[in-house]
Each structure stands twice: as structure tokens, then as C-alpha cells.
Amino acid sequence: MKRFENKVVLITGATSGIGEGTARAFAKEGACVVLVGRNADKGAQIEQEIISEGGKALFVRCDVSKAVEVQAMIDKTVETFGKIDILFNNAGVMLPSMEIERMPLEDWQKTLDINLTGAFLVSKYAKPYIVKEKGTIINNASIAGLQHYAAGRSYAYSASKAAVIQFSHQMAKNYGEEGVRVNCICPGIVDTPILGDRDRSVYAQRVPLKRLATPEDVAKVVMFLASEDANYLTGVVLPIDGGVTL
Ligand SMILES: NC(=O)c1ccc[n+]([C@@H]2O[C@H](COP(=O)([O-])OP(=O)(O)OC[C@H]3O[C@@H](n4cnc5c(N)ncnc54)[C@H](OP(=O)(O)O)[C@@H]3O)[C@@H](O)[C@H]2O)c1
Image (cartoon, rainbow, N blue to C red; front, top):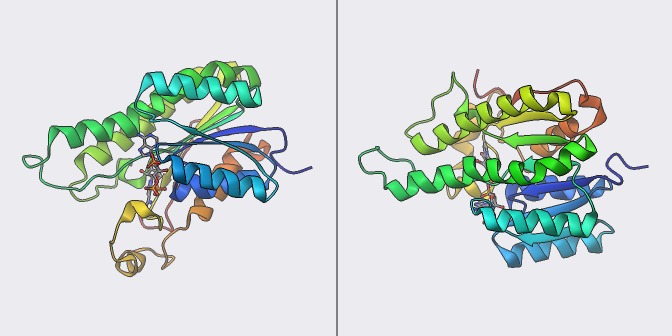
């Protein structure tokens, strides 16, 4: 039997990068994966690829910052697969960094709406189902949200990710007695489209392991946190950064 056979895994931001890599990895391990994102073409393509490789997948178009869409997405998930065991709150954006006096309020608001409120909304509507299965939540923050790490001028992004860490702590503390584990990952620099055209080799030189992370590196840790092997872990904030925060 595969590691996640009969488990329903809901992954936000599954149309690209870390979420896509994690969805493909869970599907290979037997899970029913629900792919969430706004890009319907990309979502449908990944869904089809997973199914054609023998996996179980469902793409649901949803903007995680919109409560009505999140509610409908959770309904569709449960209607299709009957339950939710594992939630990976991963959807996020990183808008251009700049001095605060130049930063449009819309950029600040959009960052918080997607990175923080999105995690809140999906958790809010998924929680009753996760409690029912005694399941688990993994939130994707960033090293940018860690107390000892200040990324240059990423005011909104860093603030949103620090808030995701505290949101995770609160849930871990309060939902343990309901049998739900909540953990938070803090990836370092992962080679995904969020980096835009930044020079990867310059970043790689700053990392003690001398390379950027791949989405698969992150997926392996998410799967560990979601697995029985991690059944005494909750409230953990785990950097996956090749040592770059040292
Ligand atoms: N790459 C890194 O170096 C790094 C480091 C630390 C943390 N992270 C975090 O990892 C997460 C994934 O990022 P990534 O690197 O994989 O970037 P990515 O390739 O740009 O993927 C971002 C994903 O988020 C989804 N998304 C964005 N806004 C959304 C919304 N309103 N509703 C639903 N989905 C939305 C996108 O899908 P649609 O466009 O289809 O909506 C996409 O699937 C983010 O939270 C990011 O902050 C990344």
C-alpha cells in the first residue's frame, strides 16, 4: 500500500512551483489530490497529467482570498472525494519590493489578502472536515517571515509570512485536543516562477549547500509532516533553506 492511499490532500497554489511539485508527489504516493488555483488552463493540464499517470486528481478554480469561492471549492472537494485529510496552505504571491512610501496600498493589501487571509479562509472552511478525519494542516510561510531573518524591503511579503507563522502556532495550540496537527514550513530560495528572472546562480552562492531548493525538496518535507512519521509534531516552524539563514 502506498503511503497516502485513501487520503484526500487539498493543496492551494497547485498550478505552479512548490504546490504543483507537492501535488504530483502526493499523487504518486496514492493520494487523491485537490489542486487549487486561479489559472484554469494550467490546473486542468496538471489534473489530466496526474490522471493519465494513474493518479487521482481534481482541479478546482478558486481565488483563496475570496470567501465565497473558498466555500464553493471546499464543497466541491467533499462532494467529489467525501472528506479532507491533509491541507497544504501554499498559495502565495511576492509582489515587487520597494520603499514603503512608493508602495501602492493595493500591493500591500493584495499580499495580505492572498498570503494570510487566503490561509485563514481555506483553514476556516476546511477545518470541520479535517477535525472529522483527525487530519493535519501544513502552512507555507517563508524564511522571510522568521524573526531573525530580514529580507530586503519585502515589507508586505515578510509581514504576511510572519503572520502565517503565528497563525500556525495558534491553530497548533488550540486544535491539538481535537486531534489536528498544524505545522509550518519556511522555505528558503526555491527555484519556481515566483523568482521571476532573478539570477539563480547569485542566490545559489549564498546558500551553504550551494544550490537552490527544488519544489521536490519542499514536497518531501511536506509529505513527512503530513505522514504518520510526524505524528508527535505540531506547532513546528521548519526552515527548508539549505542553511541560508545561518
Ligand atoms: N519560491 C521560493 O523561493 C519561496 C520561498 C519561500 C516561500 N515560498 C512560498 O511558497 C508558496 C508557493 O510559491 P512558489 O514559489 O511555488 O511560487 P509560484 O510558482 O508563483 O506559485 C504560486 C502559486 O500560488 C497560486 N496563487 C497565487 N495567488 C492565488 C490566489 N489568489 N488564489 C489561489 N491561488 C493563488 C498560484 O496559482 P494561480 O496563479 O493559478 O492562482 C500558484 O499556483 C508561496 O506561498 C510562496 O510565498 C516560496
